[in-house]
Length: 147
Image (cartoon, helix red, strand yellow):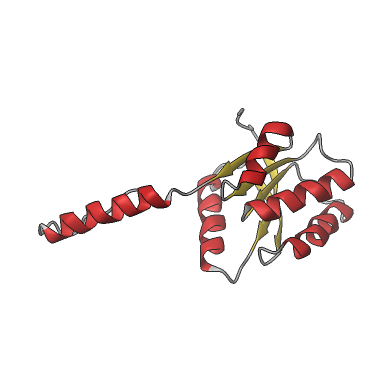
């Protein structure tokens, strides 16, 4: 995957779910201070596919220019791809999702619009939690597991 040197970003988020807010905030923290990456619009789709399509279409129809979609999960990213394909913008918009879903992995291999999906590893998280627990049990206060 090639890194984009700039992006006009449409965020598809869920402002009432803590995990979704954390994902988007982590993304925003990462691009903060990099002026080449601009969030041009944010749409709350509640993580639901049926709300995502009209949200993406509304941004396209508003003439707001964007070339990147950051979706809070893969299902929303897939719907964003469908909306973008319906509007004939497939070659100009790059889409990113979160979850590492099988459907997204297939699209990642078969379309140039899907750029990435990110997955958590529950096994690794569990291992790190156990390691931190052992450290705390041994009296090493303040140990932090890094994921």
